[in-house]
Length: 236
Image (cartoon, rainbow, N blue to C red; front, side, top):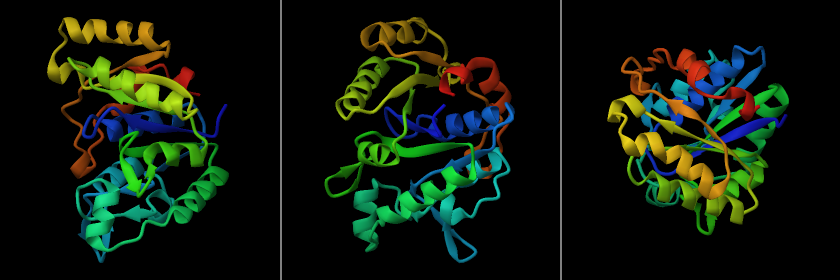
């Protein structure tokens, strides 16, 4: 079993945080000591004198994590943009050594660490350094979170292709939010088409839960839904 998994996506705002939180909570029910991490977060807000990311707080609450936020989220930026752009506009230098050291600490402290990326695998973090480079630096396999509907075949296959080009293991893919969009022909057939095209496991479809609200930290039934609909065993 690897020490963790990196949750990436085919795009932004597709449910990576909810999937990552659900996986963390579900794996914790298996008796493992779980840590969570979002190395770089943008679009954070100021609270009590520091920048705080809703995504990070949702991850933390999903497993009642007591790790210092500086470890869970070592780089926090205010502008809701790609890290490369946000850091330039804010005049902040992204310290990748700080990210690596935080992950190293968490991986020693916990049996398994769920790491949530930012955007897709080719989102730029620094000049010439992308999310895919971060995945390689942390030496983790990835899970791809994808939309269930039309267009997801192309986006998912491109993500798999880039990961494999970089020598990154793809553990599988998950579709997120099926019930919200409805389940039509595309939603029912896309997983099979993607599997046939690139031979990676389909780990399941996580249903939309209206009780989940990342901004307020309401996790709804996300852990129970993950246990029911996602093949957690293949991830471990």
